[in-house]
Length: 311
Image (cartoon, rainbow, N blue to C red):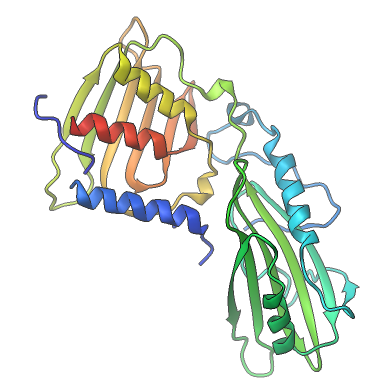
C-alpha cells in the first residue's frame, strides 16, 4: 500500500513496463491502427472515449514531432546494396508489420523491398547495422506447411523524447527462394499534447484523499485524509499539473492492490471541481475535469500521495 496515517503492460514499451514493475514493488513493500505509406499525411486523430480534442489541445506539436522522428528512424534503416524498392504489400504475409503499437496516436511510415540475398544472411547483416542509440529484439511466426515463416527485427530508441510514448523501426521479412521480401515500418506513438486547459483550476482550497484496497484478503485498510490550504495541497496540485498526457491504449497494469481517489474543491461550495483516480500498480492516472476524462502519467503524483498517506 502507499502507507498509513494513524489519525484519521510482446508489444510493450520497455521503459513503461519498468515503471509498472516499480509500482508493483512499491505496493508490495508498503502493503491496431492502419499503416500510413511513406509520404502520405497521417489522418487527424484524437483520443477515444469521452475526451475531446479540445481537452488535449489537439493536434498540438507532438504529432508533427513524431512524424519527424519516424522519418529519421526510417532514414536509418539498413538495406543490402542490391535491394530493389517495391510497393508496400497490402495483403498476404506482410500486409501488416509483424510487431506494432496500438492506439490512435500512431505514425507509421512504411516501405517495401526485394533483396537478392537469403533470409538468414539478411538478418545477420541487419543486426550488424543497428541504428545508433537503439536496442533490438527479434521474433518470428511459423506459417505452416507450404508457406514461408515470417520474421521480424525491431529497433527501439533507448531514450525517447518527451513527445513520444514509444518508437521503433521494424523489419518484417520472409524468404522467397534466393531472395528476401522485406517490409520496413517506422512507428512512433505520440503523446497527446497537454495544454493549459487540462490543468487544475486555480485557488483550490481543499482536497480529500481516499484510499481503498482492491484485493481480498489484504492487510490494507481504507484511509481518508483531508488537505487544506498549504504546502501539501500545493505539492499535490503541482504534481498533477506536471504529468504528461498518455494515450489510453498504452495503459498497462500489474497487480492492483489499491485504489486512490483525490477530490479537489474550490474556495467555496461543496461540489468538487476535479477528481483524480489512480489504480496503484498502473502507470496512468485518470483526471476528470470540466466534464471530460483525461489520461495522464502517474509518477510525481504517486510520489506525493505516498508521502501523504505514510505521514
